[in-house]
Length: 222
Image (cartoon, rainbow, N blue to C red; front, side, top):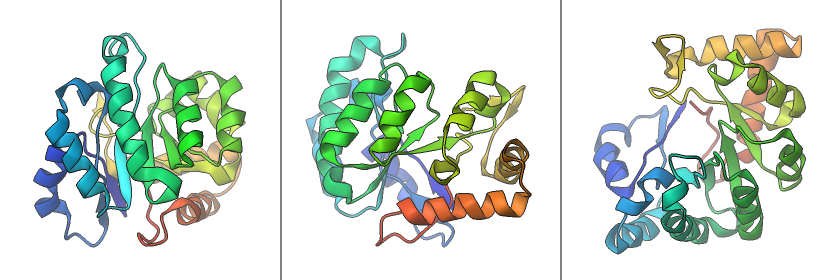
């Protein structure tokens, strides 16, 4: 199954009639950090209402990179609302943390939120702290085409690894990634772990079942 992310409550409501009834798809309610300045009070209030009806929140988080640094005050206000909606593990979050990894991990821990760090690109020295808080990490083929991504995978216990495509944004070469690329990604993970692909797939599936909100059932992330 596929977990599809959105970037705002308006996006979620637009896609819900299209994807909401599909048996193999779960739609996540998003508030992307790079959209934070565009999210007014009305839309944040709508987020709070919708959050009570969903089991997955994403993409959410903070972006302290060059692209997002100027909007960090707005991002923090939005992320605080997101974490209030997700407090004490009521939903699973797919979390953007680029350039703000330490702050994001600390905030997730304070909220006791159930979270997956999507495309983590921070320092490996911060990984142990995230693991201690029960956080998971999702990896994609674009990450594993780099030495930094492979170092992250090497640092992660197998039981904290999930898969993602991050399509259509992520690429390998000129190819835009999509959920159909997940089997090849699992094959790549299996090669890295030195196990057969069925074992790697079973491990990822077990990880998702472990972290999925109880009322949502278990799915694979894409």
